[in-house]
Image 1 (spheres, rainbow, N blue to C red):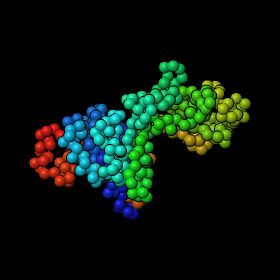
Image 2 (image 1 turned 90 degrees about the vertical axis):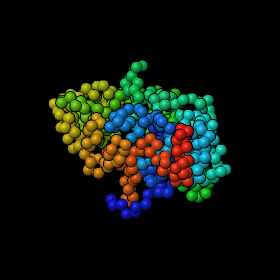
Image 3 (image 1 turned 30 degrees about the vertical axis):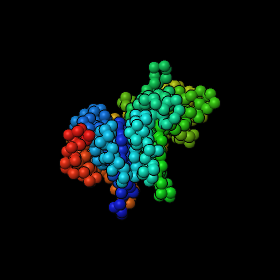
Image 4 (image 1 turned 135 degrees about the vertical axis):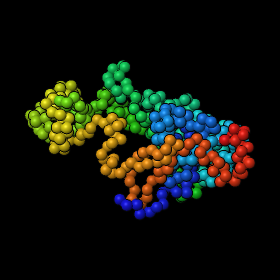
Amino acid sequence: MQNTISKRPLDGINVISLEHAIAAPFCTRQLADLGANVIKVERPGSGDFARGYDQRVRGLSSHFVWTNRSKQSLTLDLKSDDAKPVMNALLESADVLVQNLAPGAAARLGLSFEQLHDRYPRLIVCNISGYGEGGPYQDKKAYDLLIQSESGFLSTTGLPGADGMSKAGCSIADISAGMYAYTNVLSALILRQQTGVGSAIDVSMLESLVEWMGYPMYYAFEGAEPPPRAGASHATIYPYGPFLAGDNRAVMLGLQNEREWQSFCSTVLEQPELAVDERFSANYKRSENREELRDLIHAAFKSLSSAEVAERLDKAKIANAQVNDMHAVWAHPQLESRQRWTRIDSPAGELPALAPPGVNNAYTPRMDAVPGLGQHTEEILTGLGYSEHDIEQLRRESII
């Protein structure tokens, strides 16, 4: 699709973010992708602590590179009284304030919605926290793994047994909260177009991830047995998961209905009689007898390579996939064919970056540099009317 309009949806929208780690930075990066001008306020000297998580991207943190492109970095000691005029000047032209500071920290800094609304009535304030405002967990510290545990997610992942639980390999609690914050900010901007007034948004990591747990929760409705942990297989649909071929490589496959089951038996297993076998004649029976069925599938796959298994699955129109590692994903032919990779600048030089999911023919997403710590401090302050002398004074006092 050709881009026919150069203007992006959030061009002209100014976002101030008091952010660290993943949830808020992931939210604001999505806003920046759509054209918003995001000013990332960081602690002088150290900045967002995610900058120090690792050094895997030519000395930069993998988490930071992922969530912070297309932003401006302003160092500012928010606890100093001398920082307040700078924040006030920033908020004068801000449309959105996003923060995921420790519980209560924004209010102590005078930056809650209630404290700001009268002065900045059009300002949208988005708070992201572990457990949300109010309730007995309001002040409890929250990190991604802890929310995976608290939300029940860990009870559904990994292998059976008391020691079998396994966390997700990426920060899904942070990601879910960041995405709900992003969509809530977009809806608040639309609402402001209708009312002329900003609103407060309260996003909880717990509630975000519990929303994603809807299927297992309803499966365990009214005290019913929860879905068992099933490793890389599906807990309640079978066959659905990884199966070994004769070359000792796994093929991921999934069946969703009885038509696919019949095709699987006849075309893939070449055992059409299994389609009417009473042990496997419905999904719940196949799930109950999964160990027996798994042995039959592995026996049929033993004489085939993984490529041959995939070929049979494609012929039978059975969904299947390769079990890729990260190196294979970097080289994925579908991403390359669709030209999903681009290049962005960073303090470590040019880096590859994946374009945001979703292709709109009207505009190209913003894909600007990952900022160095405080890289835009002088530029931003100059734009706010600060002189070179003023800026140097703030620097001497470690305000910036």
